[in-house]
Image (cartoon, rainbow, N blue to C red; front, side):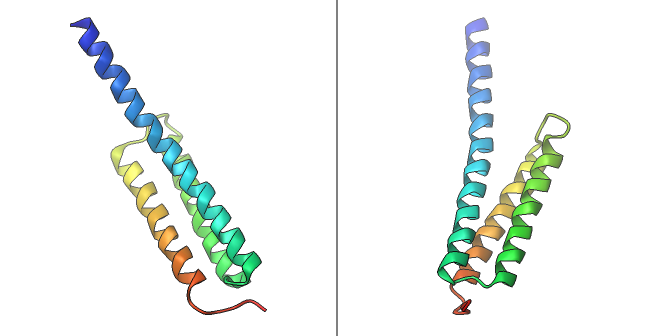
Length: 101
């Protein structure tokens, strides 16, 4: 019985940890996509600024969620949905044919 409970506890902790890594990895990738978009001229300065502000919003939500030491499913959903929207916005802004000269 104790072994089963210990296994479930370890399994639960293992599933909670990758979500944080996924959020962090996605933020890292989005940061580099924005940086590359500016360097290649695909993003104007205004577009890059707006996208960076979205990244700041994700960081703020993440910080607020972690402030009490526990991320609730609703908080996690908000963070993930905000990141997904930011991801779509990066794609659209990089492919909208506006160029920085």
